Length: 398
Image 1 (spheres, one colour):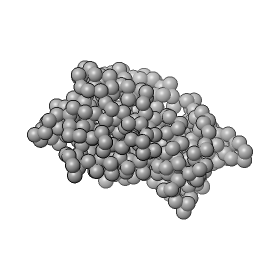
Image 2: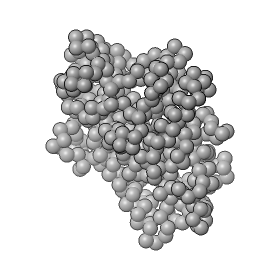
Image 3: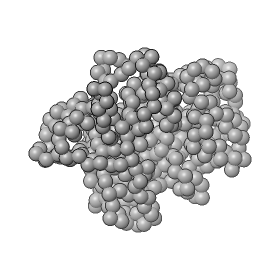
Image 4: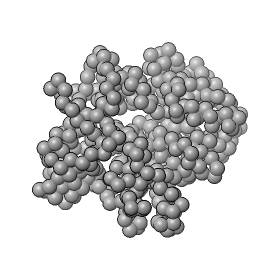
């Protein structure tokens, strides 16, 4: 659970434990926020130490401890270890690409390569369960520690198919979805059934636009915008993330790409048109903290994919708010808060939301467990990590 440690009669938090990668930017920014609020520096438990058994959470937990699970990040050794951890959980009957534990441990680094995302997710899922089990071990001897984000809910946010279903059941506006598809041919059949011409195909366990394809067709012509580059090596089609968004119009190449992505599990949604601003289309990243929409960034792009690391532009949020109008903007913030009601045991997350061109409708695109990395973006004079800490230290019981 997350709540104010002082609100139920216990002493306030005086110890922070972060599971993450030492030296990672996210960890360093969190340490900076702790220092600015005159709170003790966090003890950092690396994913590698946790997975190897070198460190355990119960050894570090005491009353007043707050636990934060950070992103496993872009550390290749961690990625390889998580893929190896997923080898035992990967079910060959699923039909998704997988490798043995030994083969995973022998993987070598290739910049940008997309490596077994389904198996990575299964390994990360096992790691999140390990965190839960270790935290539960603390409860017979001392009060259960507080966490800033629930391991189970992180797992849900990292599964786009399950997350889309949860949001829809909760009443949050989402784009209509096809769920999982197995091939380009099946995608075409399902699009015909729905009379859709445009869809987003996403890796079910991808992040940061990894494995995203914005595909459109009228039945004769085909076009796909994507961040994925392909290369055939040693008889194998390999996929690579790129910061360059490329457009492909060859249906055979598009089919090959989508078939390759399907081998790692994909989620498909209808491609809804986005509102425009400053001669670009845009969507919003909204960080919801303690149930309240706080820090907001407008992400402007000339392509369908708006992630900022793809060299897209940040828009003037105040100007975007004015363009949308107060009623539409307030409704959008409520949508983001409603989306977070699906995750009651997580203090924060980043919610991606779009407006339709007339600003009359909205849709939640994704919920990102680690979507609070917005350095320099302030809300009530605070950056995201400081606002999260103030919610932990000063909020009432939730």
